[in-house]
Image (cartoon, rainbow, N blue to C red; front, side):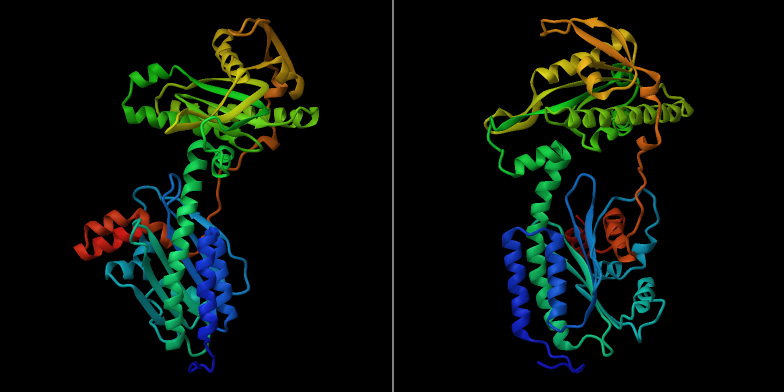
Amino acid sequence: MTTSNGIEISETLIDRVVGWMRQAGLRGDDLKSIVVGTCDRLAATGLPLARAHLSFSMLHPLYNASGFTWVRGAETEMMDFQATPDGVPPDAFVNSPYYHLLSNNLEHLRRRLDSSPSNEFPIFEDLRQLGITDYLAFVQPFEVDDRGMLGSWATDAKDGFSEDMIKALLRVQGNLAMACRMAVLGQLAENMLTTYIGSDAGKRVLSGQIRRGDGETVRAILVMGDMRNSTRLAEHGSRQTFIDTLNDFFDAIAMPFNRNGGEIISFIGDGFLAVYPCDRHRAPSETAARAAMSAVRQAKARMAALNTSREELGLDPIGYGLGLHVGNVMYGNVGLSNRLTFSAFGAAVNEVQRLESLTKKFSQPVVASEKFVTYCGGEWELLGEEKLRGIDNRVAVYLPGSSNLQFRESDALDDNVTDTRSDAEQVMRLVHDNKSRIVNRQSPELQNSARRIGR
């Protein structure tokens, strides 16, 4: 069929795009591949698509949504959106086309940008700068799992979207939602596993290590960390205060050990176990040990900053202990036949835990085994030889010297994340942050619609 723009929309080619989306969903393609592949193929049919924005509400402990902005001829990047702090005014959301859709219980909103009032939605002015002439926003709930898709299509064609173009987009949109829902469910599984049991362990489970007894042995640098005086802190504050204190502690001390080759394997009460996998050759062992020592310096600086903040609030400082060791770690599924955990265990894990406990005896925040010192190098002080439970021979225990603990420029962690989201992408984040406030003051019909999209 030929449109008023003189552009022929081939139903056969649109059929091929829809077929490709369905196959992509069945193959288990990731969300970005489906979104980018769909937009690229739509543009290849001759449909004058200049820009598309698609955002998906996600069940994730750290993020509320994932979004994409596709622009013809440009690279498409995925953005994960965190919740905004409580009390942030939702101006961007209130002034967006998406808010208009939700507040009026609409499925679509179309505007010709060469004739719409310039002050209707602020994003329109940005789109005009891109040469956009026609804009179609939509809400597409997934229904079954109570999550959904928000998005928009935009063209720079002189006469905008024709009726046949809109018909093709609506057809593609429904099938895209089905394919993306399958990808969202796959991403959900990965999100949960990597967040709760770690990236490496999550990949092992996803790759098929799901039976009791499945596992393997790896050699690694091991780090055991623990909070001091946690019992006293728990007794002198509320449950929520103690949980917040634990999270502040882990943010400060554990974060450095989850980067640069290290991974937190487990949180054990008010402590944690981290590993830096390496093989038996000296070079990779030295690299792993030095990466762990760099993380020690980072953790020391971050704990000092945390305790300074606590002192300003009239709170007691938080003490800590870190044990450093090298040895074989067994990864594996253990537990009941119908209730498993993916854990790390073995003699080396027991040894690093007992090494960490020696920080109390020596009143030092960091101690290391001779094996670790050998690979790490630098300045160390022998504290003595200790008998560790379960080990026949006495173990030499070392304290890092001042040069080994001196913070270096290469140790700095950048915790700042540059906000490169477009206005439309920030709107999707705000949908989740402000859904309760919006739902509570709107009609029952809007409440149902917002719940479908915003969860």
